Image (tube, rainbow, N blue to C red; front, side, top):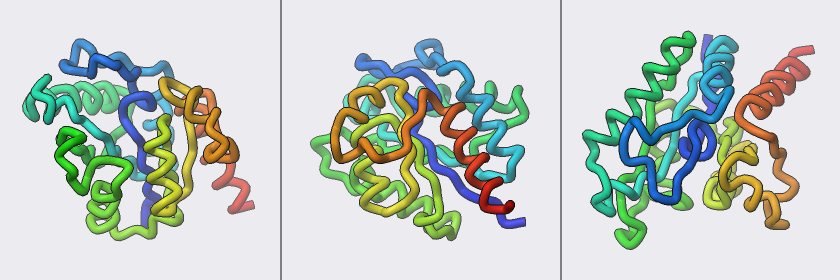
Length: 185
């Protein structure tokens, strides 16, 4: 069976965001229900990948080894619930580096598309920030906005008001699964 692909932002979707950056596994705090939502997607034959800006690396606040430890915490906690994230694509660059992979540029999404050979027009991308919604509309893919972290502010922008928005990742996943079931019926 060819699994469906779904893309998630990390900070503000899976875990709480921090203006001081998530610099260690101890600073990573999961948004309630987010890991369970990912595991539920897996049970419904979705491959989950993450696309995240991690400029704390480029700013010298933590290194790639620490970033990998942070991601290992996510993967281990998710595995305990029977879930998995196929891969975490990240941009480690400082915003001034003018790289191709920092959202809202599309480099991470081109990497995902190339590796997973999927038409992103049929792929949901769940994020909480204006940058996430910019990416989703530029690609285009199917954007969903969660109101956790930056989402409350993002939904105030008239450009993004019509994008389906949800209290959190768990509610967004319920919407996806309901929508998919309705297509089959």
